[in-house]
Image (cartoon, rainbow, N blue to C red; front, side, top):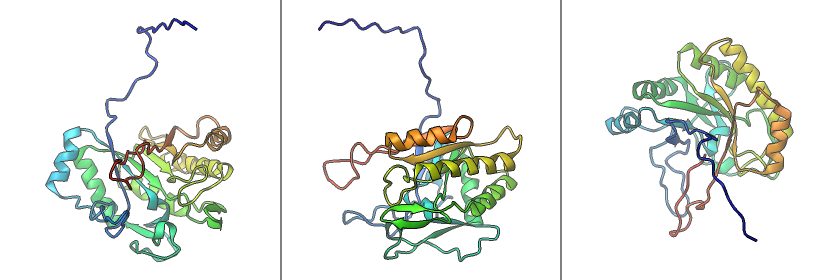
Length: 261
């Protein structure tokens, strides 16, 4: 059946920020291997050479570059600050661990060094927080129990005390829907997004530098996302993030890996 389509070019529907170019610094250690390759080498949050002149110049060239700190292992990262109450050690391979690795550690000397790089290069930072801390596995990939927010609170407090600029705190990585390595129900997740929002409000008070709350950084499943937005309601979750790998996971020589958005 014939149809006529009219495009009104005088109306702006949406605008893309000039600072839309982004990159992720992941958590994978050098011995993370897939498809008979170990590609990560020394490019992660914990082992990247943050003083390398080529890296500094590359980030500076974008002025500014958006950098997301996060990835599969972020929900196993402990921050070595405050009363942690457990050992804080580097990632190591562990049978039965999430993605085959143990919990890992971000010490504050390393966080200081990273922020020195970000400050020097003018990078805009989003940081993915551990959303599984305090929870336990119920069955298969499903995790339950309350989120222990103490470590995140202490880490955010330290970040503020040092004057480090964060554009957004992102809650969890790929825990939405059926999840990838782990999943959390939308009801539980939404309540803890609210808790994170309360922490950020309390610590940043009336600062005009208060970061956004971003979530869930996972794959889109309509029912799960709809429930998340319904429970969090207005004014809690500032940015909804989701991941897309339309070109596959990188396991075939005929495909390349897309970035997450």
